Amino acid sequence: MSNILGNHWRDLDGLHIDVSGLSPPEPMVAILELIERPDINEPIIVHHNREPLHLYPELNERGWSHEIIVKMPGKVCLKLQKWQ
Image: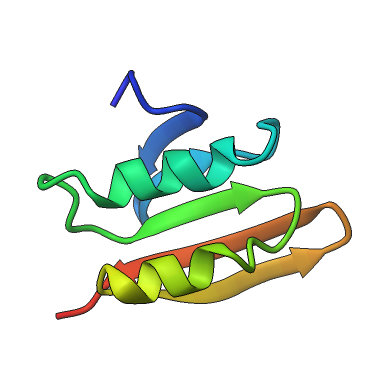
């Protein structure tokens, strides 16, 4: 995962990726590269500085759902899950 942009770590709730400091389109590229990895089957928690509206159709096309778990000015956290 070291070649994927952003900071990443694992926690009890899944794999986390922080893309909040990246410039567009890097956040979307990093998230899409992560979900395309064949070894990723756990939930992904995305930490972003804004809601990534253009990401949602891409997730849907790839079989991933999204849920906003935190939304406040300057901070959005999403939980992404692969469809079963």
